[in-house]
Image (cartoon, rainbow, N blue to C red; front, top):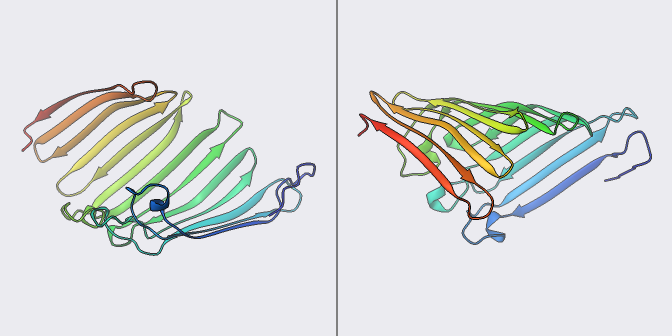
Length: 212
């Protein structure tokens, strides 16, 4: 790789390769996963722009209760410059559990805001953790900027369950504006706030209605 700070194109052609890096190396309680990372970046002439791709592959995916990581591969292409990056094609392959696809962007010039949309058409939680029942979850997760904070909105449903949640994160707090889980005529709603500084206080209120 090359870094040329005094030229119009400060980034040169770069490639990053990491093989067999397991999360368990950093923490014995984390899942075992032989991860391989490939990333490549190439400048577009002297325009200051660049494009590239990144791929993360798990050589031994499995369920969480097997102390494995339920991720088969993650791939993304990107392009932009030092002030803004767009990733129009993001794929998160969870193997037998299903797949998320989407797009994202990041911009420095307007407060370092980030946006991300991921959608799934048939997520099976039984392949995330074997004690969970089989599902076919459809829906999306949307991350967007919100007055200096980050808003995360999730809308996920299958034939029996529906989850809708909105969370705001920024500064030293995570604000769960609303989380609602429904199953038939039953529902569980909750809201709360987590303080990330000092004692990390957590407040949560909720309501259960006709839920067995």
